[in-house]
Amino acid sequence: MNFVEILSPACALFLDFDGTLVDIAPEPGAIVVPCSLVPTLSALQTYLGGAVAVVSGRSIRELDTYLAPLQLPVAGVHGAERRDASGALDRVEPASLEEVTRAALALRARDARLLVEEKGTSVALHYRRAPELERECIDAMAAAVDRSEGLALLRGKMVVEAKPCGASKGAAIEAFLREPPFAGRTPVFVGDDVTDEAGFEAVQRLGGLGVKVGEGPSAAWQRLADPGALRLEFERAVATKVAATPAEQ
Image 1 (cartoon, rainbow, N blue to C red):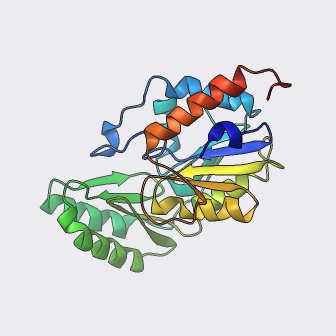
Image 2 (cartoon, rainbow, N blue to C red):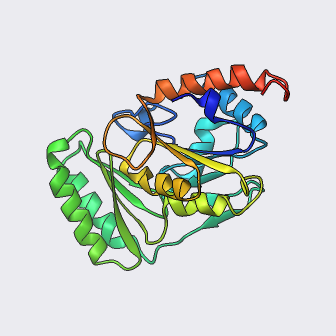
C-alpha cells in the first residue's frame, strides 16, 4: 500500500502506538521512539488540519511523555480515557479493579518474569518473558473479571487486560469522528494487534480504511510489514505532500 496515494486533506488519521508507530519491546517501558517520529507526526497533523489522533492501550500520560512536545488528540487505555482536540478529557471509571489487581499481583509474586500494569482504569498482565504461562494468566484474569462488575477481558500480544465494559478503540474513533476537526472526513486507522480490530471494523463501516501492521488475520483491508515500513510511508507522504503546494497535491 502507498500512503502517498491514500492520504489527502479530507482524511482523518488514527494511529495505534506500540507495534504500529514504534517497535514492540520486551516490556512496555523499554520502547524506543525514533527521533524522526514526532516531527513526522507534527507535519501530518498540519497537513490534515489537526485530524490526527493516537488510539492506544497506553495511558494518555505515557503517550504525552513519549511524543513530547507534541500533544495530539488521544484515546488511552483502549478508549477508557480520551482527550479531544480542544483538550477536554473524558474517562470511563470501572466499578472496581480490586479483584483483577489482586489476581495479577498474585501471579507476579509467583513469577518475576510477569509484569503488572495498573493504569488507573484498567489492569494489564504481560507475559512476554514467560510465554508458557499464557493459559494460566488468561484463566486467572478471566476468573477475576467474572467476579467483578463492569469489566471485560481484552487479549493482546502477550498481554491480557481487564478494562471497563464498553470502552474500545472503535468507540473512541467514532467519538472523535463526531467532533471537529475529524467530523466529515474519511477515517484511516492503523494498528497491529487483536485489540485494534474494533477500530478497523469501525472505520471501514464508516467508509474509511483499516491498515494492519504485521502478520496475522485481520479485518483490515490493507497491510504493512512492520512499524519501520509505516514510518517510511509517513516520511514519504510528508516529503511529497507537505512540501507540495495545494495545487500540486
